[in-house]
Image 1 (cartoon, rainbow, N blue to C red):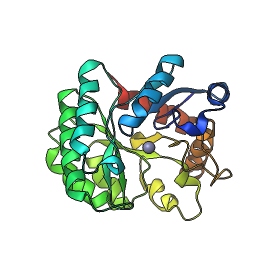
Image 2: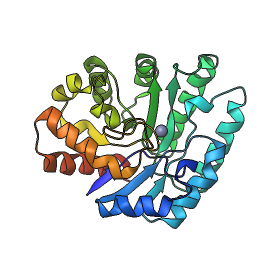
Image 3: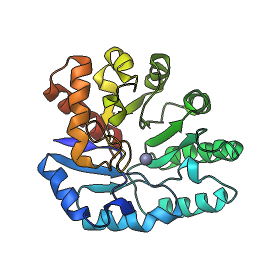
Image 4: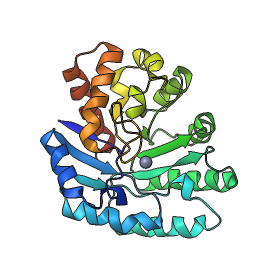
Length: 253
Ligand SMILES: [Zn+2]
């Protein structure tokens, strides 16, 4: 039994075979899939998947790549949803200096507002950071009042960065990058206790080897667990048991 803590299975990439794709995953023991929101345009599709397929659970947040001039309007829509019903997490939110630096001040403001929601609704944060790990840690550290929990999704950092995340009480979301030749995680993961790791695919992106470059899906989650087991020289069953328990803990109500 495995939990995919981050998969955009509502994406149009799954339009034609979503039911089959989810059946395949379930048959492989992927019992729960957490869906990160992106912005106003992804909400309807995400909630439809959640209502149709048990075990597929929605989060609510604004992705940093969707923080533009109109970000206050986007945040207002997210907040309206948060007031209406419960969600598994605030996410995905975070920062991104890879695609576009134009809205960096707005990204920081959106980050702080969403951290405030995590506190108010007592939900974990699902954090995206790309080319901005240190900046994100600098933003988050002063806001940690002991109540914040969450995950740095798609972790690709170095050991000191991992240690700062762990010191904040956050999990590292490990995905397909662990299987990439130059992913760098083979250097970091041996130094990290499995206690701090959760599994994710980030479907439809970042498919693990041997599917790299193709569409990713939750079915491939065991490939990531297998790779972690190799990197850490820990039995696969241990990786499954501990990361599943961590995922339950992360999203616990
Ligand atoms: Zn994502």
